[in-house]
Image (cartoon, rainbow, N blue to C red):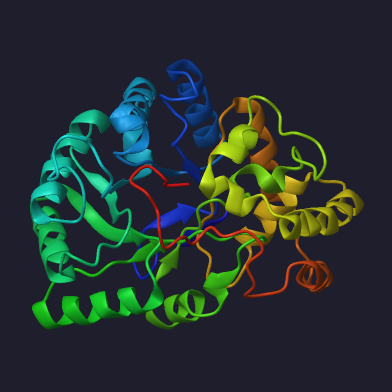
Length: 335
């Protein structure tokens, strides 16, 4: 397993991060624990979840698994805050001081830990000043509840603004961002990646498999499998925007490359993302142990310069073929 520095910190994280979004939801607690144990055995030391995933259930299951295996001290444990945690309370959401501090305490209880290694703001919020958000996070660091802070799906300009505020007010700064990044949406290569490399920002891409579109399970003219994420894409506006003919052009162009290398399409997509400039650790989000076992084999895949050239002819750098950066994320549309 290769380990990389998380942004400008001295913390080393594995080149794959285990995303726990499915745990406690579609994945049973028993299988979730098995996947976590398998990931740690494989050398993964980086786990990511969020308070909003199954309204706290993902954090609970992740915390239970780490308590059961006794390996909490071996992992870099990340979670996030921002999403709606109570439909009838407008203060149980967003990036306000009140919500951040309340939810940090709640996440600590659910995760059964005394500290969060990486606490991330799940989405930007324009109607709350960034100084309020940073000040609350800074207090959590000084209280020993949080060690590092980050963001998810922020624009490059928003992060640079936050650096300025942190410097002006003497507050801890964000060390990393979780952007959507895959071979169907490469827009972060335009501004976010150059900014991150300039300022020493870690990048932890979410949806490197494009929500499953880059796994090979979907084809242009066949209906999606009944148990797959895109099974009801025709009733989900977000998924409809991603289920495009252009996306299948890319999938069909990448498949022969994977076949020639003797690997699955998902392994090709993960290996490509893992070795892109500026990337720290892509997040895999297996629903089953079988999916995890496929994903982890991407560690053995070598992406050559010739592979990159061929891939870039299929998926042009900086382009978008299915949108993962969304300007209109609803309260529960986090992936």
